[in-house]
Length: 259
Image: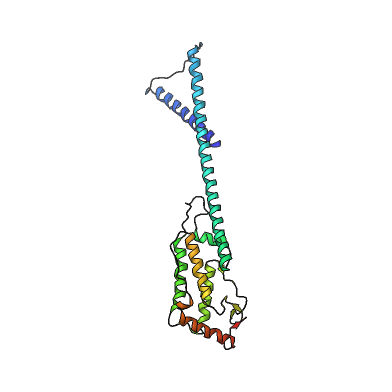
C-alpha cells in the first residue's frame, strides 16, 4: 500500500511539473497561453463524462490492486508447494534409512546433514528442487570403496601391521555416509586394545555394508552407481591373511584385543 501511494504522488507531481513547464514556455512565447475556463453551467453530458472518468480511474486502480494480489498469492502458492515437496522427499529419505537400519543393522546419524550433502539445493526456496543427488558426492563414496575393495581383492593382502589402518579406513568411509556399523555381540577387534573397530572374525560383512549403503543412497538419488559386493570367494588371499591376524590377536601376540 505504501508503494502505491508513492507511485500516485509521483504521478501527480509529474503532472504538476508538466503544467508549470508549459506555463513557463507560454510566458516566454514558445507556446500559446493555456487557461482553464470554468463554466457556471453544467449539462448532463459533462456530468456524465466526469463520473465516467472517475469510474475509469477507480476501475484501473482496482485492476492494478487485483493483479498485485494475484501475483503475491501465486508466489505464496509456489513457496508452499516447494516446502511440501521438500518435506515429502525428506520423509521418503528417512524411510530409506529406516529400512536400511532394519535390514542391515547399521545406524544413521545426523540424517539432515546427509540429505543436505546429497541434495545441497533442495532446502533453499530460491534454488531449483532436484530429485537427482549430487553425483560428485556419490562418486566420491564409490571411488573410496573401490580402493578398499581393491585391497581386499589383491593377491598381496595387508600385513598384520597394515590391517588396522585398512579397518579404520572402512570406518571413516562409513562416517562420511553418516552411518555406523552394528557392533558384534562378541569377538570384536579393539584396535590398540581400546578403539572398537566393528570387525569380528568375518571381514566381509563391513565391506558388504559399505557397498549396500552406497547402492541404496545412489538409487534414491537417481544416480547409476552399484559398487561390487565382495564375498569370501572374491578375496581368498585376504581372508586367509585376516584369519591369521585375528588368531594372533586371540593369542595375545599383538597390542590389539578381542572382546
